[in-house]
Length: 194
Image (cartoon, rainbow, N blue to C red):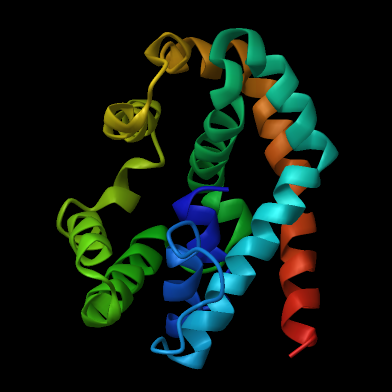
C-alpha cells in the first residue's frame, strides 16, 4: 500500500500515523529518539507491507501488470490501491475524506520537527501541496506517478497508467476489495499484541 492506506490504517492515532508514514524511510530498528507511538507506527507499516506483499490478490495483480510495468508492477498496484481507497472512501470509512486529509496534514506538520531534514522537507511538501487531495481522480493519481518518475530508472515500464486503469479497472477494484478487509484485520491483530 502507498501513503493513503498506511495513514488510514493507523487507527486515528497521530503518533502511529506518523510512524506508519515514515515506515518506508526508516531502515532497521526504529530510532529511540522517536516517541514510542511513532516507533510502533514504523513497525505497523512493515507489518502492513508484509501482509500486502503476501496477499494472493496482490500477487495476481502484479502478474497481470508485469508485462506493461515490469519490476514496478508492485509499486503500481500499491499506488493504484490508494486511488481505489480514495475513490470508494464513503463505502469504507465514516470520516469525511476532507476532514481526514486536514487532520492528517495537521498531524504531519506537528511532527516535522522530529524528522530528519530530508524527510521533513518531503513531508512538508506533502502538506503544502496537499498530496492526499489528488488520489480520488484518475488525473490526480497520474500526477502521483509523475512525481515518482525522477526516482525511476527504467521509465519504459513506468508509463501508460491511464491505460492500465482502463484495462484492469475491474481486477484492480476487486483486488483492493479483497485486500483491504484483510489489512484491517491484520492491523487489529498487530494492535492486540501490544
